[in-house]
Length: 401
Image (cartoon, rainbow, N blue to C red; front, side, top):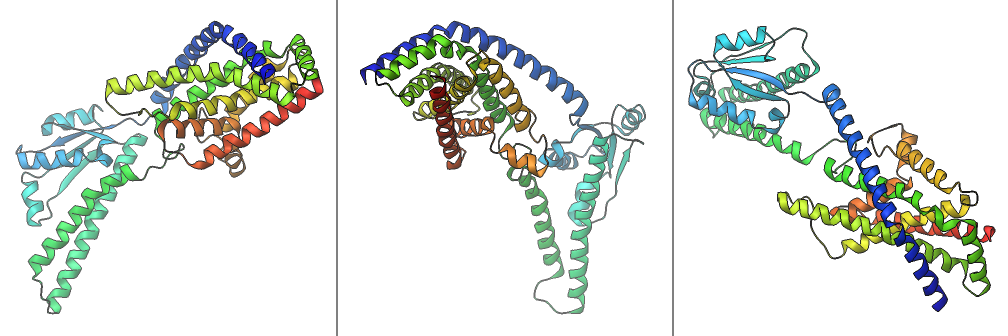
């Protein structure tokens, strides 16, 4: 045990000695990553981002009740996500539509609110420019869906009214129409909740900040593995051989090296975690919560990543190729897992394989550790990877000595 602790202390000192190099690597990789993400985000946002439709609303009598109703519609999630309402005069609205300064014009009747309240079919005129964009097509589709909702409700009311005129019922026609109208309005207003509860996304139920925060941390950590190549030089293998002759088994050497490599990784994870806590507290958005168990969870992720380094260097570190293999392996994992572009390679076989790529398991476990919204399967995946990597690393190290 004393020999193991002595060897572990030496490995810790050597790993801590490379902290300045780690810091430089973090700054370099982080700066390149941030610049790349900003450029990619700006480019994709301009080319592929959904641009809101600019809609001019014309209310001839400037009725406050009608404007309140339009504001209610504009504030719904399904509306606010695709368009912005601007109140203009009729002349100015159509002038801007012709100049393509707005994408559509909605003109309501002078007493639109009262007409709707009294059950009158008050017309709403919608004008759109020809050869519209994709966003205009989405807006038009939502308009059609809205009209269909009204038609369904009207058909239900007319059908029930016809039935009540032919058959005696306890409820009056006015009461029935009021109840059905209230039910319809309630269902329309509540439909906005579906945009909060049901989200179809390539990253599942995670939010984009959570996903890319964890993805960025994991990519940074696996790239830092290049700095550990000095721990597996030829002279180090000779020392391990001598230690084995004195009774220090290769499994203990594997544990000591992996633990020593994990501590600097954990150190940087704690810095990132502390920084996110400070930012979250300062902004008051509750993006992240503090928990005493999170540092232990982070260390397990760091240890698993370090066991991956140990396996690669034990197998390929003889001729100084370990760092190159780690770099190539990291790039390959990023591409195959789709970690940078969620949904990449959505073929069934590729999508099924992505779940078992180590970088996916590391990111998912980090997600569950930081935001406490993962499953126990993430922990199982981490434990399995540690056993596999440690076992293969120890086996390769035995062959080298």
